[in-house]
Image (cartoon, rainbow over all chains, first blue to last red; front, side, top):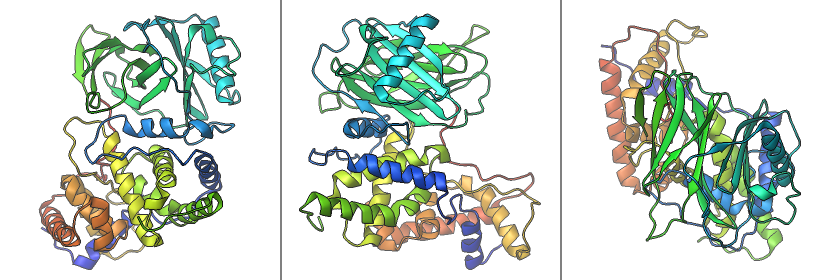
Length: 266
Length: 190
């Protein structure tokens, strides 16, 4: 058994700091400046939801999605959600099973997605493209963008999104895909948003090489078949804003594997 | 509420001051607790809260930094995915490989780093959090207490217990294989 002096322990801990003191890189400074500009461009006269001490998944993205609506920048930065709010009938045509899009329709949806977000084509490919009822979803991924996600009504696909208020989009910068065991999944996006139609929750992430399907089970009682394409999965479903009548929704997964087995995970 | 800002220009300048003074420290705070690729996202969310609640941000920049850390901590709590989550937010340490270059450091310090890297994952998230707030985040007891929403006295007690636990774990840890400081709070494949 080794014993260490208290000051040695403190020094060793500081040596092991995973975020040691350093100046921002040029790229980090640019992103910080861009984030500042986006933030101060947002309205500041709306009430801010109080963060709760107890955790509920999906909260953070919801917060940004709600508040950065007016702060759309020209390019995808730290987080650049677009949110167009209104009232509606809560995705009455939504289906728990997705229909994959043809390559042609997926490409048109990607074009609409980029146009609505005002982001240039930086070589992203369509990683996931699906339709649930009258709603089209695309997830674009590329070397400089981990995910651009758009949800739009089918009749907006290929159209000029200007002045349309039924669209939702968000984006995040590039991140290295996780190293996954073949039977694992890694959810890296979970957020709540809204369009004119109503509120929804969406999740996305990566799947291991043996994963052939992912089912999302929600605390509201839905069983949703996620789209699985390549090393990605994605799903979304109608939801409601959190309130005393509608506590934070949770969800968990059943992972379907190539050998026919399944495994549950949270 | 420490102050109320009247004009939009004053408001933006006030936010610019807070942003400039705290951004790097906040980024480091978050990077200790999440995968580095997510840190800037979280900082953006925290700063957005600060912008919207600017009248609640303490006027003193050191206190404002602690306030931002508290918002970040709640944000991280809210994004945690494990169903068995607790209130504390675990902290990761940098990786250390046994036998790696020690840059001429004293052997005791090198050995201590290896021992702590081995012992750290054995600590509870609450213990990790208390030690990190004091040693890594550099907060005073009142500031750390504000982050956790507890009294300074309660924080000092928590820190004392955490340090005692760390010493006990360091003393009992047997180092037998290449060690890495496992990031206790990272999202993990499921």
